[in-house]
Image 1 (cartoon, one colour):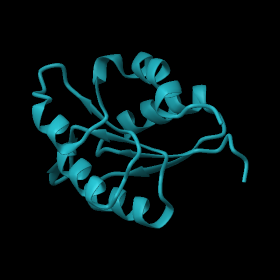
Image 2: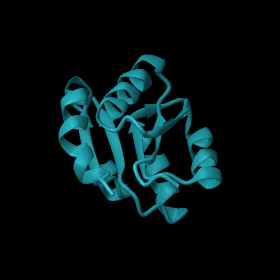
Image 3: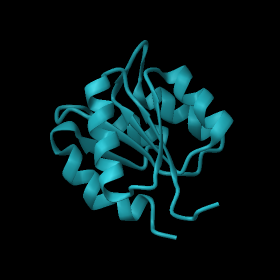
Image 4: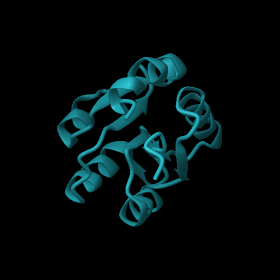
Length: 124
């Protein structure tokens, strides 16, 4: 398998936000394989079936919050970066307690992904 190929899951109920995240990842890691999920359960299923190197989660998912997905993935032994995208006013304590790796603000999405992607997914 090509070591440049990484698998990223983007979980969020807003297609525009998922597209922004996908575009930001692909612009820096063009060989990345991207899976998208609109809710908590779909994201968990994708992780259980295909694994992942990185999961980026919207603060609000249909019928749940991002911290719930973080907890569920950590229980499934997801020892990978789990990143939460949120509004600036979001109280990060619950997400950090759940095991999120990093919290980024939605307004700074593209530049945060560009800055942190080499840390989350170092080139192999």
